[in-house]
Image 1 (cartoon, rainbow, N blue to C red):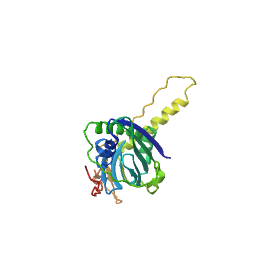
Image 2 (spheres, rainbow, N blue to C red):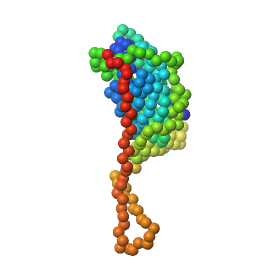
Image 3 (cartoon, helix red, strand yellow):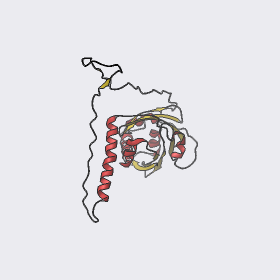
Image 4 (cartoon, rainbow, N blue to C red):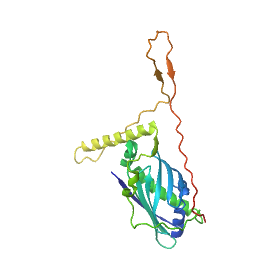
Length: 259
């Protein structure tokens, strides 16, 4: 099941300035919460690394359509199922209405719990507010790309990201995040059950708080062989708590000229 989000904000800069700044994808971490890195691999292909609600995700996206001072539309090609568009329209003298449309498919317990709590919707609203502060605080954009990508009219949905459907991509999640996600689901279910069992006409509802279990700092693993062991034989303890899992690096030149 997919989720759609639409958010708009008016920024006090001309359309060309707002649009030009949005074409500088590698600047996104400066105003998008949770976005750690965006790499411009070529005019149409982007590599994203983000962490939202404790879930770290890595995916690739393709620019499906780009029209100067009007629109940028995209869809994931691998690693996550999401698509959408951002549009720009004049909204008075020297002002621009920026509208973000997003459709995505949450995967896994924590992402689905976050979806139930509208985390992505709140994140989109926050990102637009940060974009407003970012662009209004400077006299000009940090760069611009005035090329175009021909595409079909309309806003792409997740059907445009069919190649990534069911692809969990390179994702990582901590035990604390998993516990928090499970607690969120349990908490939401408990509150729903409480409300459904309330008497008709009742105005007060009692909140149910579920605390996630504490993640142990260390785990001792006892390894025993099959041979008989005397009572005085020492027990071998392996204190290994984890393995290194370095993130993969993807590099590429950004062909978009900066002004």
